[in-house]
Image (tube, rainbow, N blue to C red; front, side, top):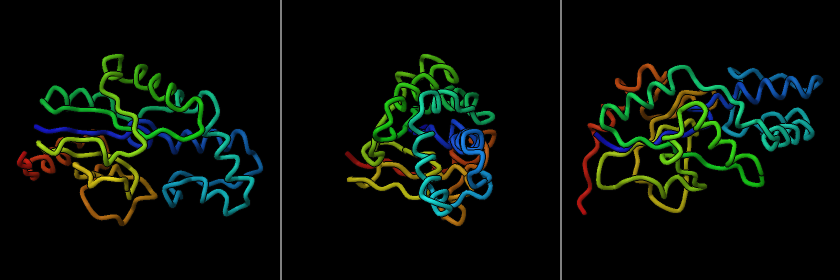
Length: 197
């Protein structure tokens, strides 16, 4: 048993496909960057290489009302979250807000309620610094697609990368699909040692 922190965008919610669909619909003359060809965690940087206006278009999409609320859930994500809880793990959503995006936080919460249910709202942590979230007294992991997570503290968790085109080649445990959560996450939790108080 342990603490499982799960990122939202790119792990539970299909952020990349949502961005691709919105960009190709709104920027018909813009560069086409299929999800499989995404490189670098920040989409804006890849798009603006084709011109600064395309990076600005990505920013505008991410700040548009409805973007976060309407993201599709990854296959098996909701079932895996419930299964982890039923297995006795302390499971929380741990997501970072986009700064200067008025709709981001309320829509993230609306997404959680819609796809996972209202009980998950109490289990959602929104923090700009994920290194401050977790438990040092029991095994703790963070499932996140971001290849490098930095903050003000030494994180209390071990990161498990949720597979994405922009995090290839990064070392450490990796989850390719939610159907495999037991095979990937439970051995990582079992391998951690409790820290003394």
